[in-house]
Image 1 (tube, rainbow, N blue to C red):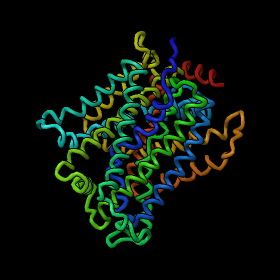
Image 2: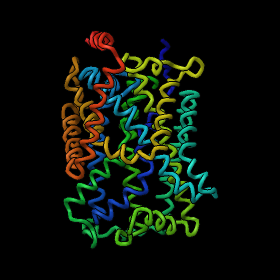
Image 3: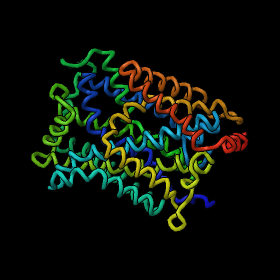
Image 4: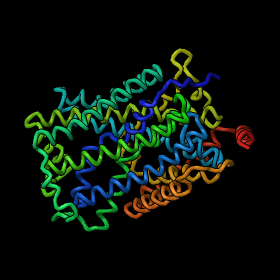
Length: 439
């Protein structure tokens, strides 16, 4: 069976780290968090707290990527640490349920902004999310080097635009530092302190979410021992800087007291910076961010089902590389097809609500495999970083469970459905062979 070629450099790996993190939420989450928290200092503290968690996780995933420089990410780590059953449950959840829902949600989220940019009818707009998913699926199908180059270019464009927005807010005189003062005082209309912080932490986690996806392309990254740690740590640093600067620019231009809703805030910010052209400028910016997120997801997600098939835990067809393009073509087609199906069924909102609780638990479980490796970790940050990451992940999972326990439990049930499916698709002798291979 042909093996993957290492064609991706540091820029592509960083683009995967930052791609999903800085997507649709960059223009929605900070406004909602600022309104609820009511204080610029509290908002910065929540962002920095989430940055600490992400950096701890990035250190853990850097070590895991060095130890297991192959495609598949968490599936590979969980398989090494906890065996095939736990790894299969993660793979089933992510490949078949979660990632198609995330991709569909991003594609649908782009429609209102697309309508601001292109003078097209309602029918064309309704078809646009499908077209977006198919186009990025096709790009990933045609070659890893091609998709990596496009993803890196879109990511650079996104960062230039976002930093440009911050710079323009300052040099144009529309940003007023006085709007941030007093830094610590909470504005009238903000929520009660504990619910505001709890909600802000969960929102910040969603905003940072996706930095771990670079682990899934480890088998295609050049010099993974050097590249992946730089990508994880550098990518998380970039995400932190972007959210802090964008949040500060937002509030310096539009005071917290004037924020009424997420969508209205985007319009307010655009109008203040660019006048009547503001809606189009901001819409274009959002579209660039969304395309960057979908590009990263379209590359990373299929590598899970590919890795599962390579290990004999999924249908063999999905573990093959295309003879001409060298990409896991069947796995890419599967992910794209499932995303389109979820989109057409209109189920992506429910999928995300159900599965995010389980996804957080798997993230923490993957980091905990560092305590189960035969060769001990000899890094300066061990064991503090994994302990902090696991504890903070548990806090966020608990907050989600307290807020809305029913979807979380439904999600756990969906994950556990992987057990009978595994037995249905793979006969006992195959499972025994997999277990023997692991041992």
